[in-house]
Length: 380
Image (cartoon, rainbow, N blue to C red; front, side):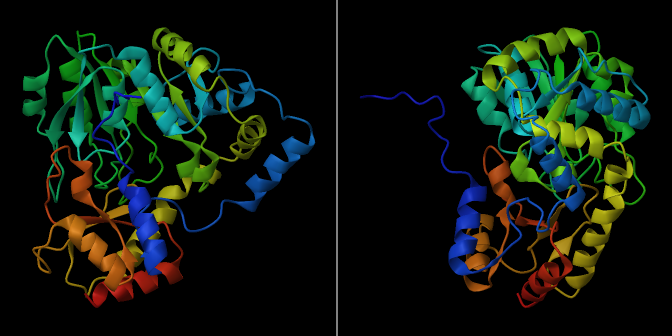
């Protein structure tokens, strides 16, 4: 049998490979981005409650009504806009499914999608498998600022979508108001859709506010915004997220969604709806993670790594320019095997594997783990 792969250049992800290497080497894993602590036991109890009450069959395709309503209320309070819980909010099996489904719903053969590298690794394959063409704009260490003039030059009649991610994985940068206004100018009067990955919306540091597309009316009318319960409530393995957007766009999204997963975990949806009645369950997250960031940075202050403090997410990029001339992929492997500390090399997030000698570390861990990791990093 001859199989013609739609993704011939894709292999096992770097996250899987580095996590396996960390396991084999007995290394501390600050590579893969998942919390090293449990979610709130009160949320576990709510899931059990709704399982025990018999909420174990299919949920409505768009989501449990109470949860959709809670999301709509949250967005209105945070970003000052209203999304109909009935027609403009859909619960998804994690943010990655939402992103894949959105791309599948709107990207046709030969359509172009503008992406910013370094980029989370699910964007480009979803575009390619749907016949589209990724068009890249590179961002650079240490500021990772967007050159909007470069973006303007790339826009043409084939541009169907622009994907943004703020707070940004892997670099930890955040779009400011000026970035959003520049993006708004570029897409105004076009048929370009903005797909906004905002899964780290509640992890913004140093007094900044999250600049959601939902805040900007002209952007909002052509944007789909994606969010993650797993990132917010420390349970990435539950694979629960949601997407919001104008009714016309959400109608097309749901056409694909209903034949992709149809609906998502029913008792967890009911549990989240009740849990989110207390807004403090998510509004304190920025302070929570900033303390972890500051603890980690203080602990590695005597190391030879260079850094600019992360502005958001639970990732910190460290430069090893003063340490080694090795390729970042080689150094990441060596540090895992020899120094017992695992990270992710940032070049894997660029289409041409641009190597700026940086590594990404996840600080969503308890203090004892971060202390041990810092001790190892300071010995390098």
